[in-house]
Amino acid sequence: MCAAVYVLSTVTGYVLTSALLLKCPNLLHRKRRGTFLCRHISHRGGAGENLENTMAAFKHAVDVGTDMLELDCHLTKDEQVVVSHDANLRRATGINAFISDMAYNELPPYLCKLDVTFQKECYCAGGDDKRIPLLQDVFDAFPNTPINIDIKTNNDTLIKKVSALVTKYDRENLTVWGNARNQVAKKCYKENPRIPLLFSLPRVLQLVGLFYTGLLPFVPLKEQFLEIPMPSILTKLKDPNGLTRSQRVLIWLTDTRLRSNTLRLSRICFQVYIWVLNDEEDFQRAFDLGATGVMTDFPTRLRDFMDKNGISKPE
Ligand SMILES: *[C@@H]1O[C@H](CO)[C@@H](O)[C@H](O)[C@H]1NC(C)=O
Ligand SMILES: *[C@@H]1O[C@H](CO)[C@@H](O)[C@H](O)[C@H]1NC(C)=O
Image (cartoon, rainbow, N blue to C red):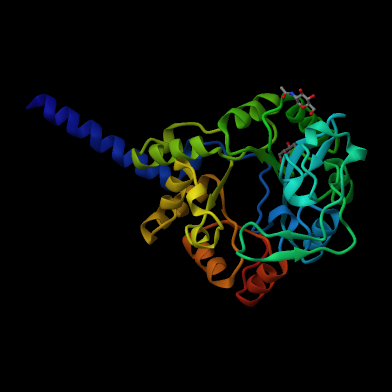
């Protein structure tokens, strides 16, 4: 009897404390230092309006007032950090070669038209800019724009070089980096813990576990940015069978109204971005679900939607 009362009061105390801390996470978690807020994020610089990951795409996105550029990095044979989504150049340039096997000045130009991964049967025709840029070119051109960097390969030199560039350009407070693989994310954090970090997929699953057990407020987390896919993009993807189990769990996480509570609470602790959304219905749904930001291939479309609905720039 006595033991039961003890257990019950302990459990009740735990549940109440946990609920309180979820509502007021700043009681335990230190307020995040220097975190920038972004609502409008351009995926690969806006792959639906310009050739993905080109300077022309980034410039256009910044011109329409994007809050953040999302891009991907690889390392060339001569150890230059370049902005490209794929490791192999076949899809984007027609040449079957790996970036890691070529020097920067040997890289071929992009094709005139590229497919848009998150928009079925859409091809984006580019203008004159078909060059694969250096990460440094992007930092030079947009010194004040936050950038979301996906470290595409598990290569220590790549991680070191990106960190060195971020530090050199004084962008530690304007950068978030990471990768879906936890191995890569862990290396990023170890290399430079001052650069804000994205949750890797395994860490998102841990986060969900912590949330549903009420442990979330008690566990310090090194990540500040949560990026999750919207379930509706499943139907728009070309190959939904290609999803991993973790991706399926992520999709489940955002699947019903019920989950919106998770999102609302999570965004107290983190910035929550939903990707990659390309039409008004999905933009609306994401902001309704409590996303702090939306990642799109069509920066102009998202800008128009936000203007029309009075969704302002942060701060
Ligand atoms: C980043 O922001 C924090 C807090 O706002 C500040 O103390 C720090 O000096 C900034 N770092 C850089 C490199 O600007
Ligand atoms: C990292 O990339 C460079 C340049 O492509 C390459 O020479 C090196 O072997 C890679 N390191 C690993 C561990 O893969």
